[in-house]
Length: 313
Image (cartoon, rainbow, N blue to C red; front, side, top):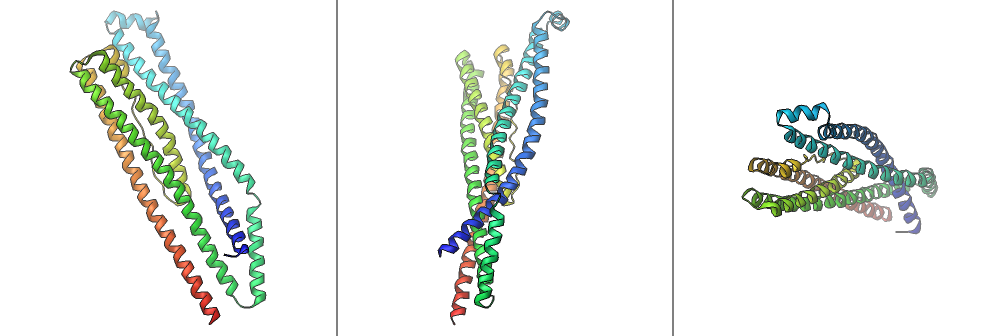
């Protein structure tokens, strides 16, 4: 490859990068708006649920009413569980919002740095075509078109590789979550047959660990989905995981409540495995796209070689 070809190839890659960033920025702006609305709604929900808990823990009429019915502790447990779930969802949304804001900032900064690239690329193309025409015949234009196709396919392969990497990161986190849920399920089984406080604490420690990992997975899935914007794959990779009935298990430690927690763990594992299946399906599509782009590159290179041989003949 000549020095001029290297310059043209680099410029074209920058043009493609700018196009990718434009799509990425638009995607992130949409995510940002949705997350701002979601966070605002979840914040209101969190405050409302906590207010319900405060009422029952205080000396108001609600606390008196449920106390007279003899169901105050049961109602308080339920309200605490709902308040915890609302707070957990809000915290997750805030972290996701912050991550999108940071990604958007970086995308806009890089986009600004590439503002002049399309004009430079167009100017270089026109100059090369002019030189080719001056030399005689359409050969230069033909070679330029083949070169552009190769550069476009190489740029697409780069985007595919980045998407694959993001998908593999999410897949690794899914495996880690399943390990934590399996641990929680094992401790939960022991808890139901009389494992006592040690089993209960170990179970909830594993659930806490799983929840932290789910929050990390949520960010990984968002990044994976965002990386798919430029490779024409759309996947709903959103993992929704019900909050576990931790307070019921702490305050009403009996078989039926523990069985409810075990059911939640089972449901969570099913959701995580479904997400794993979705990720694997998209990764298969990405691998096929990568092979298609590789075929395009090989075909264009062969066509270029054949065309140059025909010119010599």
